[in-house]
Image (cartoon, rainbow, N blue to C red):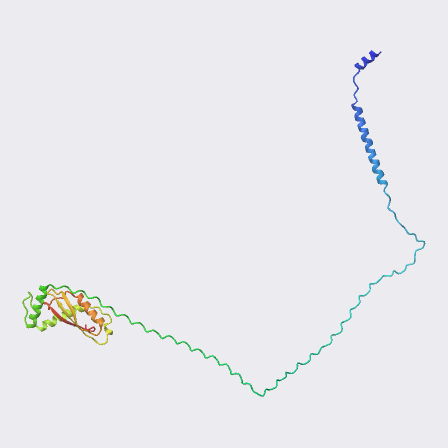
Length: 268
């Protein structure tokens, strides 16, 4: 029998206990949930109810007026008594000091400062005189050849003695011809003369110059014989003579080796 039972046991399929384990787990969870609800319910029901006090009256008391306490009125502050007026005593009269027997000298009044004299106005400065035009420097006199100078001396000597050697040109022998020649030279020099303001000169002063020239009319020397008293006029005439060299000849081609010429500022 033992052999047969063991054989049956081997032949029977194995029993599955998985369902039993799941049911056991669900049962345990259900019991735990119930226990939790019971605990919470007991704690909620065990709280003590609040106590209330009540007073029972056998008869209702008559309606009595309820005394209402009115607020006490605040005390009115008493007005302050008026302050006594203090009369100010009148100021004492100034006591005049006793007059001294000896009168003190009165202080001398202060002298007023004398007014400062006004500064004198500066006198107008005289206008400086306009500088007179400086005379032009004299041109150096040209050197005369000794032979030419000797010839000029001979001609001058012959003119003084009343005759002149033959110079290759006709000599101006008559005084009329000499006067015409001198006037011609004077007019020529005046054309070179520059002197503004001749009309403003007081009077008509005369300046006299001696002029020496070569046979060709070239001036070799200018000498002032008489001053006009007006330096500006004298210088202007001398400059005009220097510009006039060589001088023009006479109508017949002759020249005067020595000329004495006079010039006035207002002569035309």
